[in-house]
Image: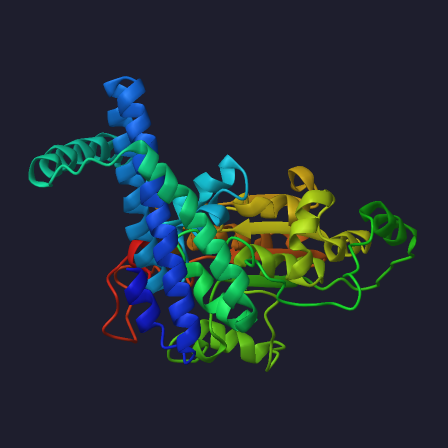
Length: 404
């Protein structure tokens, strides 16, 4: 797998390919030697049950390498990167990510239970089969230990000798295909050097104090509608593919050019509602509790805020980040998450029905901010079965398992 990675990446620098290939092979060999050493210790001094448990863990460890190979080839993302992304937030957020796959939680529990049963079983079968057909070479623990000590020295020697000849771009290109995703001494190079550190966010209390001190008064308060539609391309808003939206855009102000604040939902929404660069998202997550400052200003002007969402706003704590703790900025708050088997287009309908109710009331005619979050345009793209299709053929896959 390491060899295939290096020869198929299409990089022009053959020296870099050879360097990282050697590094990957030594890291892989060191993994095997360390596992053999630990396995022999457990087999010699501890119980058979622990030894078989270790074999199961080893089999799982090697399976992860195969999964990692597939993810890198098809999604340019390693298992480590995926796990880091998934578990970077709370358990609640992890559950929301599982819902977003389009697979029911019950199915996930079944798959996990099945894997916990199947992995040890396969590991034991492979162990007994290979122990019968493979030649039994007698290798002492002392020899294994010597090899285990020499291999890291080889990695360090590679680092010190050849790393000065490699560019930062080489590391970006190849580090993700290494078994450990980094080299021992020279990994994680700084990608951007700043003359001075980035300015942090202004203290939230200071910003709120400025808003509440300001004399904000408007004579007229026309309704404000903000439709947040995931992944919707501007060139698809045409009379043929989206007739109602195309008509709506002609009747109202439409900007001819727009710029995304980020390439991920939670970061781009932060950029929209806080009018800040998405680089500050993580800091805001930790320090902000009062929600969006622009929404605070609208509240100060006398607007009421109404939320109708097909998206689950617990995802990355978006509700707290936009509307404050317990969404206190929202005068009405309606969320219709599309948990399996409900589809996104059904949640969109519920959100739009709620919007129609609000608009139809006397208080809904003026002085309102309507925030509508639409999900069906995002993967796993969904629409009613009877809805006419303008493009064919289309992919039948409905989950993230084959997104590539």
